[in-house]
Length: 318
Image (cartoon, rainbow, N blue to C red; front, side, top):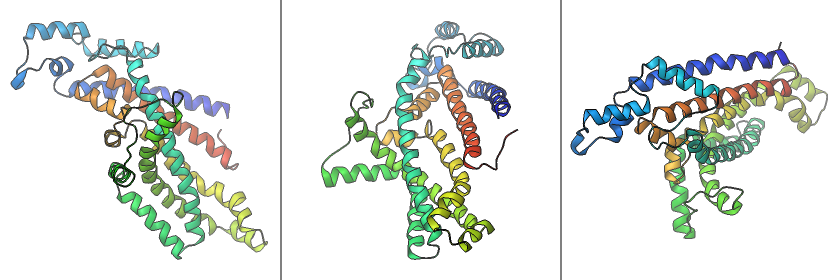
């Protein structure tokens, strides 16, 4: 097991290196740079070429691409992401301000999705082709059909029209004021969690139906075991593995993929920072954000693989 963990950790290095090369080259292929974005004048006219060349030299954009890449990667190795080309502030500080919000929102949404998807999927499988199953399927299909940002707009309008109340519009860290923090983030978490709960519910239902038809489940029933015992000891651990994969990967996506939902609820998370970085051609900031999300996907995928062996003793890594 230790050899497998070490092997997987080492395998992350070439993957992250490939992501770094790809995002570095893609950003340079896009026409324009941060200097042109900053100094574009009225009517689309640029400032003097001399001034723009001076600014590019200050930012190191006049150097060959391989020199820029090596300099950036050397900083990454030293855990130094450099400075934002737009604001001049350290990128670590720019990300730290938004990461706490996005991480908490992703955790809350994933928790809501898990707490709803697993019991609803099990219930639908046990009550297959009954009104309970149909109700759960309608609930899950509705979640798939409604975008999370649209559901968020409905939540805001409902709170405003019915209760004459709006959630706080300024983010407050959890350790500063838990009430204000939860009053703001619980609504986007519900909107996003419902969307991904629908995916998990349908996955849980299909995998549970498949497991309940296995021979060892029939044998356990024939022995007279309680259904509750059969579910918890035999069926659930096998059926939950695909659901765990789906919800875990969605959690990694939520860290930087909630651009529209963040705009609806006025949240300055990593998604908004992504948009700002790309719009401003802020190479260093965008590269750091892409590497952060790629690392999150790799770490979550690695954690899920390790959790497989804990949930299912038949799985062993060598």
